Length: 166
Image 1: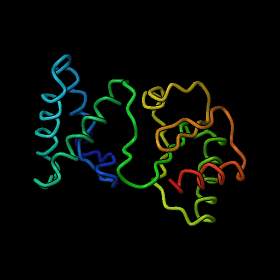
Image 2: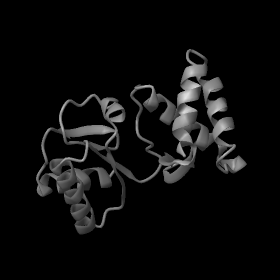
Image 3: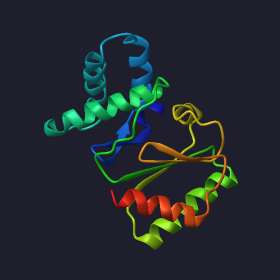
C-alpha cells in the first residue's frame, strides 16, 4: 500500500523515516497551491503527524523538513539541510557511472574517516531541481561540483578534505 511507504528525509541533520510522505505531498500540492508558506507548513505537519510521531520539541525542525520536501516535490530548488553532517548527493538513475561514483565516494570517505550523509538520488524530478543536465552529478553541501563524469578519487579526496575543514 502506497500510504505505508517510508521515505527517508533529513530532519535537523538526522535521517528520519516518514510514513506516507508522497501521498500527503500530492494532496497538499493540489489543495494548497498558492497559499502562504506557513499555512502549507502547518498542514503538512498536521497531516504527516497522524502517521508519524513528532515530539512537540521537534515540531519546528519537522515543519521545516516537510516544507523542504514539499518544495522539492513541486520542482523548486532548495538548499540541503546544513544543520547536520556533511551532505553528499550522487545524482543519476543508477547507471554504472553513477554507481561507480557512489562506491568511490564510500571508499574515499572510509579512507579519510569522514562521516557524511551520502544519498544516491535517482528520482528524475528531484535531480531536475539541481539544474544538472548530465549523469552522474555530484552535489556536496548543496553545491554541484561535478556533472557528466566520475571525478578521480584524488579529486574526491580534495573536495571532501576542503569541506570537512569548514
